[in-house]
Image (cartoon, rainbow, N blue to C red):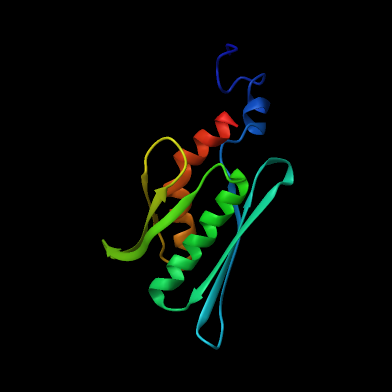
Length: 150
């Protein structure tokens, strides 16, 4: 194997320690008896660094998706310590090809690059959790660039 081969033993450990993404580690969603909901998102970085985001709102099928997506955006902003700022434009569940797809639209308010971001996630089991993963899909490139330049 050559030294430039990505599978080379000399380069493999360096690649494992240099992660360019946050890892989705935990999600909690609650509905209360008074018709409200709350979402908490936990993202993990290297060396055990964990960031949290949370959001609340009136519970309804559409708002539940928005609350989960907002919590994910707040966790990402917490990780970036104010260097990134996002605004949720919308979150929607769509039936496509006999499956539920969660789509989110996000405005990138502070960074260079695209101003509008779009993410999607195939969410058969849990559409609310799918909204969090759609946000991570939408912000993946912007967040990856932020991490590389950090």
